[in-house]
Image 1 (cartoon, rainbow, N blue to C red):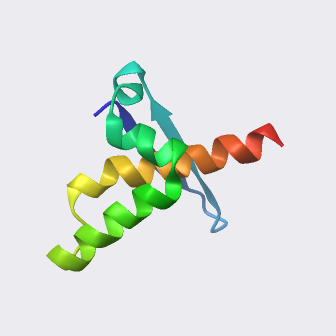
Image 2: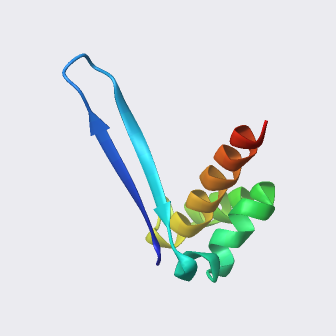
Length: 77
């Protein structure tokens, strides 16, 4: 899908997360929805979770877009 999430921990109990996305992810409509309209993307994901009863791989693009959009907004401040 053009993006990945890398989580790492250290011996002191801390850690970091690294998000990486490519041009392919930028072309993904669900990923862009999450970046530009996070409320809509989260409603879509929540609706699917309520219907299915679990988080689906289909929700990953929306949620990654929301996280990236949030972090980009914080970085711009």
